[in-house]
Amino acid sequence: MRQDITGSGTQQTVSTASYGANRLGLEVGRFIHIDLGGANEEFVHLLAADPDNQTLDAIVTGNHLAGENIRPAIWPTPILNEGDDLAFDILSVASPDPGSDLTVVIQT
Image (cartoon, rainbow, N blue to C red; front, side, top):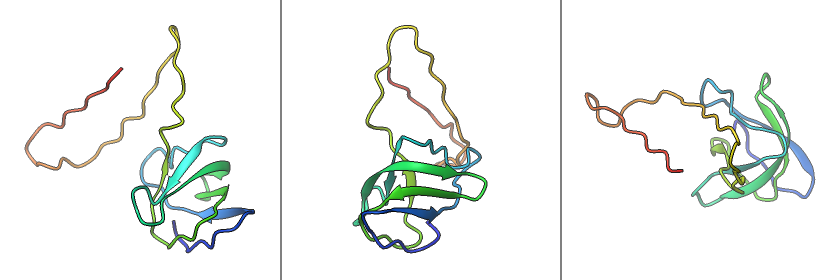
C-alpha cells in the first residue's frame, strides 16, 4: 500500500503498487489479504479494482500502515470439476540460490 489506512465499516479506495507484470492480479468479487502473516493481517472482499491507476476499493476494518503488502487470497478455494480448465500466471523471480535451478511443484 502506498498510504496508511484507517479502518472503517465503509467502502474506501486504497492506493497500491504493482508487484509484477500481472498488475496485481486482483479480480473484483475475490478476496485479498492485507499484511499476510503480519500483526495487522486482514482478509477483505475486493469491490472494485483500477489496475491502470493502481487502486482498489474494499471495506477495510483494521488500521494499516503504508508499505503493508496486498496479495490475492488463494481461498476460499474454488471447486474444480472434471473438464474445467486451469491457467497459471508464472512470474519470474530471482533464485534464492544463484547458480541453482528453481524447482516448482504443483499439487493437484
